[in-house]
Image 1 (cartoon, rainbow, N blue to C red):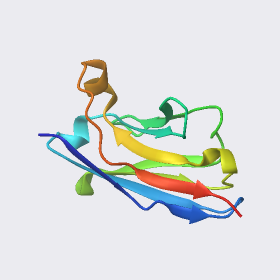
Image 2 (tube, rainbow, N blue to C red):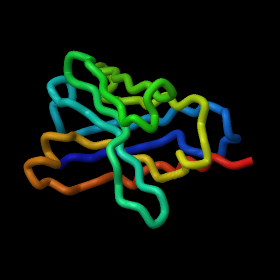
Image 3 (cartoon, one colour):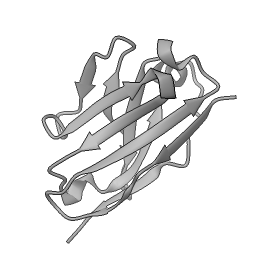
Length: 118
């Protein structure tokens, strides 16, 4: 059974930084591409960033240059370092495995709330 546990969210002022983490179990993490998604109130969940098994990264235009995704295969953990945060980054952040979603496995963790406000 796949488990995804996100952590590290919180309240941060505009322009600040925050790092969120996601630890996965029940999968072969080292051979799985991983991704971060977010869902703001009243909006659909959107892809923020992904990282391949070879550590190639890709970002949504809205976060390019401000966010950095990374992974630690020894800890089965993927990170999202967020900098220059804006109020519009406020959302619940989730990680997941893109290829499982593509196969129709629509299970998610509880997410971690990030609120950017003064």
